[in-house]
Image 1 (tube, rainbow, N blue to C red):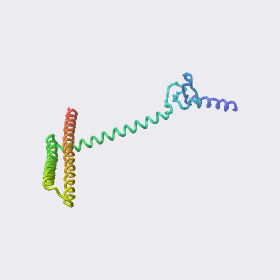
Image 2 (image 1 turned 90 degrees about the vertical axis):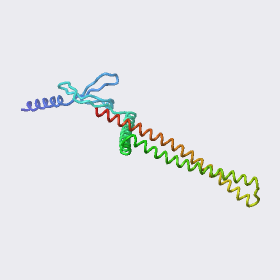
Image 3 (image 1 turned 120 degrees about the horizontal axis):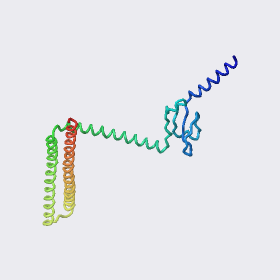
Image 4 (image 1 turned 30 degrees about the vertical axis):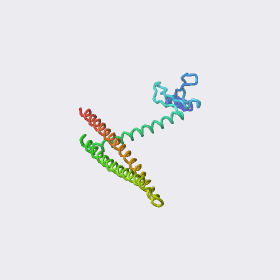
Length: 207
C-alpha cells in the first residue's frame, strides 16, 4: 500500500509539471532559452508561454516599455486627443456656416452689408478730416494776417494742437477701417471656399 501512494504521488507531480506552461526568452547572446521559471535578468524583455505537451504558443507577453517609449505613447495620445478636438471643432464650425448661410448668395449679401457699413464709417471719418484740415488752414491764415498776442495766442495754440491731434486720430481710424475691409473680404472668401468644399464633399458621399 505504501508503494502505491508513493507511485501515485510521483505521477501527480509529473502530471502537474506537464500541465504548467513553459516560458521562452532570448538571452544576451541571442539564443532562445525555455524553462518554467524565467531568470530575473531577462524579466524586462518579452517572452512566449508554450504548452509543454504540444509545443504550441499559448500567450505572448510584450517587453516592458522604456521611459522614452512611455513618453512617446503619452505624446501620441495627447496628439490624438488634439486631433479629435480639432475635427469636432471644424464640424461644429461647418454646421454653423451652413446654418448662417444656406447659399453662396447669402454669404455675398452678408459680406456686402458689412463692407457697406465700414465704407460709410470711412466716408464719415474722411469728411471729418477734411473739416479739421480746413479749420486748421483757416486758423493759421488768420494768425498770419492778424498775429495774436498773450492769452489769445495760447488759446489758439491749444486749438491748433487739438485740431492736429484730431486729424491724426481720425486718420488712424481710416487706416483701421480699411484694414477691416480687407479682413472682411478675406473672411468671407474663406467662408465661400469652405462652403463649396462642404457641398462638394457631401455630393461625393451621396454618389
